[in-house]
Length: 216
Image 1 (cartoon, rainbow, N blue to C red):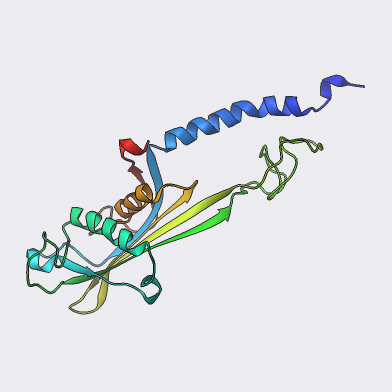
Image 2: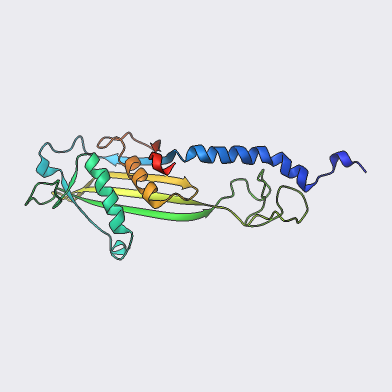
């Protein structure tokens, strides 16, 4: 018997340890920033010069009325919108007794997807969709994959001019990775969706958002 070519669990594990260690290191580095894919469209050249015309109110879809997280989403959107020069009507930082010029609709959609980029027998130490022998080899050892997933988070923000009912800005930011705490994820997605407002470049682009030091 040729023992040199014999495939054992421990030899397979040893071959994969450097790869797993590198993946863990990359995950630690990724925690300092959020990578997003952004699409934005705008008919605005600039915001109005008068402060009275830089106010907005939030608008909700029927499906958002009973959403417990919508209040928090709009609270964080208010912070992001203030950075680009828009003030929530009726707030201390907005002109008094002024009807808003714009309405803002913001939505966060999250979907959990199976993470299986290589197919059933790809170069994954835990091959198989959902479950299967681990670290290559036709043995049924203790290392069984239970399936891995990623969370796809998509934030959409619409800015509508209430004088004519037209949407003047539309921003989409998508992040697909391991789950990120909502209080970290939402501000980063908002910053990405509003990047280069009010004249974002055309097409899909990658936007990297640095995360606060406290979350690293």
